[in-house]
Amino acid sequence: MIATIIGVGLIGGSLALSLKEKGIANWIIGVDFNEANLKRAQELKIIDEASDIEDAMNRSQLIILAIPVDAMLKALPSILDKINKTHVIMDVGSTKQQILQLVSGHPHRGRFVAAHPMAGTEYSGPDAAIPNLFAQKTMVLCDVKNSDEDAVELIETVVDQLNMRIVYMNAEEHDLHTAYVSHISHITSFALALTVLKKEKEQGRIFELASGGFESTVRLAKSSPDMWVPIFKHNRHNVLDVLEEHIKQLEQMKQLLQDEDYDTFYKLIQKSNKIRKILK
Amino acid sequence: MIATIIGVGLIGGSLALSLKEKGIANWIIGVDFNEANLKRAQELKIIDEASDIEDAMNRSQLIILAIPVDAMLKALPSILDKINKTHVIMDVGSTKQQILQLVSGHPHRGRFVAAHPMAGTEYSGPDAAIPNLFAQKTMVLCDVKNSDEDAVELIETVVDQLNMRIVYMNAEEHDLHTAYVSHISHITSFALALTVLKKEKEQGRIFELASGGFESTVRLAKSSPDMWVPIFKHNRHNVLDVLEEHIKQLEQMKQLLQDEDYDTFYKLIQKSNKIRKILK
Image (cartoon, rainbow over all chains, first blue to last red; front, side, top):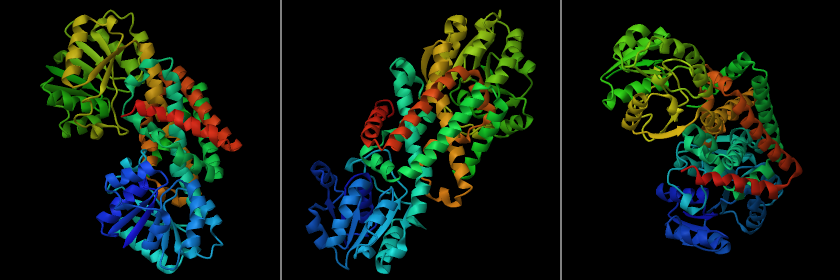
């Protein structure tokens, strides 16, 4: 199978590597508006050739959109305009409601399968692409009832071959859940980095003591605003809800510290320890 | 050298393993009020024998206090009462001002070296003890000017042999810096766990989508309240300051999202990306 990857960054590039390695595709065409990234992806042998979108679509069966979610809103309708019944389009975006609303009435909507691999790193661009990013991870497929059966089957086969676990959800559930287990983690990391960087201006030695715990909570703050601002924009309502709840929890802790109510603080931490049942 | 470890949990137990492995101590006596932990540490061969504090002190040159910082406030003065010039006492506590104020006038203050290894995990107890926890990490030594020269020299030699980097600070600086690069990370993790666990009650499937980013920001929420409540209590003033600043940053992000001011949001994330220069 010939596959086209539109957007050869961390996710698109890593997918390209896996599609080739697992023998799912024998030829990968890369498309990217960023000429430097496209060239770099070729140098790194992430893609077999670079081309434009028309040529790539003429020759591929599977087209994967791996671009920021705002760019997706512009790209997907025009791609759906041009395809035929042999094409299957998949995205890998972190939000789903807006994009699925946008194309809901499109005559070729059935050829599109909305997907979101729950995998990534805090780095971006083709140099960040790595093999095996997706193995043992979860792929969410959204609103598959609105996709053609053969299109869903192809994507399910690909996801299986990537050694991923499939979870089916509707777009609404997806956007709510990712706000809680992904988007808020990024917000807190960005805010923590800002908090500490601000203090560093007065206290230059502050990072001498940074260790694994700090690094763990703040590493997501290296993530690209090009990817994340559109996600927060698309999922604004859910992100605001969880952010409000998170600030409430922090305010409660602050109040307990101010009141020196350490017994209640102790009980709160015990309650938060229940996260042990979730994490490995 | 015979060394006594008081508190055979994650830090004390890991230190015991390293002291033996590096040949710094050839015999380790373990002391712990928790009989089960003491027995377990013996089973795991973390310590060579279990004993009581008087017997252990009579036979050891180096005594390491690895107990929660509130227990330290009770234990250290009575230990200093009993020691002589051949003893060196070191602690590994996460806060320093209170403990050093408490013993500042003690006639044996000079035998005590206040230390804080910037290393740990979210687990606790002797089963959490691991070899090489300290290699390549930072050991903070506080207010060494108030310790006897030979006591500091012994500890410096031990820390060198553990392959650790030494940073010297006064207690005030130490407590300020750890609030920013360690204590706040734990607060945000506890609060994030509470936020998400609360939502899980309505949305049982929420954790199906949890991936590496979420795990990274929330793993510290597995940490023990027995260790952490006393730290927040001792460092209340600094922790409240940084918590207030962190809530301010989150409120600002919330406001920008509410106002749909994505340009300013973008610039904030770019600013937080500067954490890249700090983290590897």
